[in-house]
Image 1: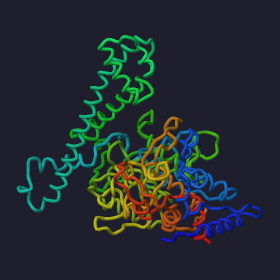
Image 2: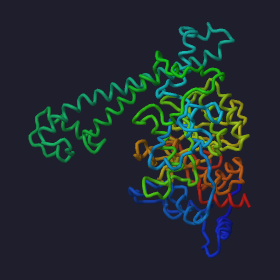
Image 3: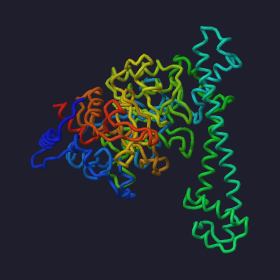
Length: 556
């Protein structure tokens, strides 16, 4: 991989601006080779900086963003690009959101609401995309589906009693069962632990609220209580400890209840061995015979659109309308978001993902974001074939690396562009890890997966402010947020340099990023450190400013 000198980038930047009209001051690019000499940011981020940190510039702000604001101010100002369709394969998108409604893909070949497949693509009234889940919100984990399928055959058997022909399936069953039992025990354990704490905190809180005359008391307020009884001393000690976890005891109780609800939800859905969540669709997920199932309700069945939060957040990172005076700015302008709902609360089906990719490709997407993943896959070949199809049609797929803090070079994850043999399926698939805003040894998010061979680059993914349903905005984090940041950069490149292929755009995203020689903490474990350059294929942090400069060179 070539590391270009900053003087070359500066000269190229002058050429970019000169081509946009005379009299424009030359730009000085972020020095690719010199970022290690920059001082670390000592002061904590302000609220405004935190909301926009992913767009910051490492050189001027000492925040490891993607230099988005700098790119718009110095390179893209006064230039016009062309529209690019970005497919968001996710949990659904709130298409009525104030910051997204004007950046949606519209299928002009389809007549809204007439109940007909006007464009003959197999999907009725698909105006803004398609919903392959229908009314499904919750689902099993894939290993639970394996248990349901293989349990009747292998329950009670051992390796000694299983035939050689069944051994591969038996090993999958044993692995799935072990993971199920581990996760089930964890869920039940957390529910019991949090429930026990809550049951002690609630009466103590009621007693102290009555004694102090308010519910929002502080640790200092508790310390003012004179001559407490032995029981009150215990209550004061416990409540003081709780206040170290939140701004108030009611806030801590809300966190406890939220944790209990989350794990109870996992018991009811992710680990449920009895319920058939898929049955309402009427298709068989183990064959490709039926393809036109689901409906056009791309934000899902929930009136509150809570199930579409993840996809709405992802869509906002990519393309929330820029400079409209509300909400936030997405990375890309000139973008139309195509919403493809295929990711439930649980593990996605391979069939849905394969068809979702093909749907987005066939309907004009030039970039597709896939912020999801799992570690079991009964039909990976369907998804691999879809990746090959996307590559053949010149479509770039930007994929999230995952949030388990794992080295992906030692474990198979899906979707991916590498088969078990190690051979690459497609050269237009890029996998992204997550960065935090603390530049230095802690720059890699403590949850982010990594891998010298199986992760391609890194981008901002910690505490990212973006759109959420019903005209709201929230901080979310994960490699799910890092991938759309890169999808946004890719969309900008494809908008202003449409002659570049998806393969070339991938090369630009990887080669133009910022490297660092720093050792970084992995998986949140201070004892586990590697050089940043050794935890992804490129060893780079994606940077829009430098990507545009390299794109200009490649296109001209």
